[in-house]
Length: 265
Image (cartoon, rainbow, N blue to C red; front, side, top):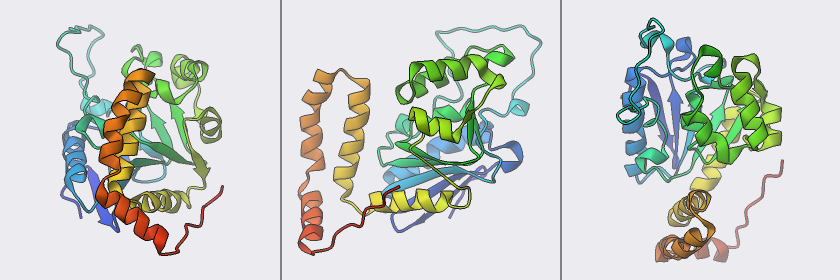
């Protein structure tokens, strides 16, 4: 099911898989993808049958490599920039920008660089193939790395993020190193990546949706507000997340005698 030119969207059993589908361009975004991603996030946000999303890239070479340079005029080195009116093309790519609070899990295959971090900076967690690499070439090509690292800052230690930005195209963060510093939550083989991401999404989707969404909103709020502000506003999310429907669903599961078999890795 997909009526998009640059995206594939499939939904089953409460889980949607959204695939960046420009593998011949390393899933870089052009004007069409920039227009389609906000529409896709709104569709997923409003679809009551979707409880969790897997975000990935088509092919094995790349998750996403940022903006498609062939879609941007090359220029002659002269640069006019008005910080009061400038709108970055990547700012509208991520799910949270569009009020999408259902959990999004990124399944990262191959390269993830530059503008890919607009997306990865707004997902709940990342699962990476062993072949995945992370880097940001902005500085190498004469551009300040500003917006993308700002989104990554809460996910990585300062020194590791600074190193990645300043070494730019000269170095890449491996999937294993990304796991060590906390950018990635799990590393698996390329063959197992879709299955592992799907398993996590299905596990999340099996739980009461109000409780899940309130938890997601609370953790993002706790990251972006002061501790006192987050605690004070947390009571309102408790009221929303502990809805009668969520409590009834959870208690039915408990009373059934069924128990979850935890997956330990």
